[in-house]
Length: 296
Image (cartoon, rainbow, N blue to C red):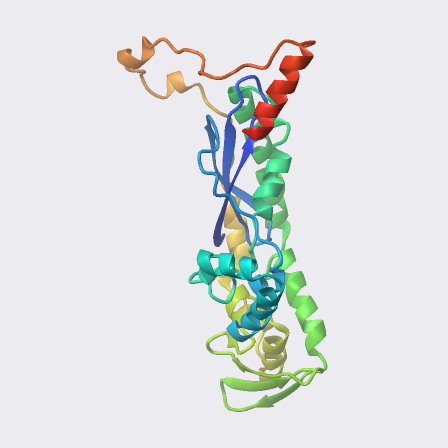
């Protein structure tokens, strides 16, 4: 996987309510890869925050570019800029991130997973888990077949990105500084230096995405190096196949896996302490329930 984990939650819509939390990542082909699911009474952490007015600043690769965009935010709203400073730049920007976040800056992956599980959120818990298993079984089967049939060195999405970068690079001017360093000038007159041995570029896009930028591709062509070798190994077909080589099995009868201790087997399980929705036709009660539900 690309080692970024996205966590999100969505409310269950059954009789007893609750919340389903999901943890997911992206595979080598930029597809949703579910990692874990949890069902809770409610979302206990209300610190889900959205950031606006800030896309260019958040996505900038170079710190100098980030500060140019952040200066614009300060001009528009000093309150917003102070709030963003208080969060810490390393939490929401690409250029100051302490880890590797590639091009993943939002929870869109998790939101897409929640959309897929919309029907499951209407079901009782056991049925919801079985529904999720069915979805994952279908995903793994189709992706396993596609990955097995794929013959190119890079996954389809990574290969497509490299191809688009190559098309941009055809008009660049490349000068070989030494065996490892190449100076590349774009059509816009921007000059960067590519270090093929370290797989870096002073534009910093190559460093962060782990996929060669257009300047790095121009340098690789000049050096007669195969472009796909510059991409990180997680974008290769081997790891894509490895991600789906196992199967998703249906939920087994837990009773056949281990003996249930007597102190648990004899427990009386009560219904959760939660307000139930009113009977159909109770308009006043339904309105109040809707308000409570929306507030929750």
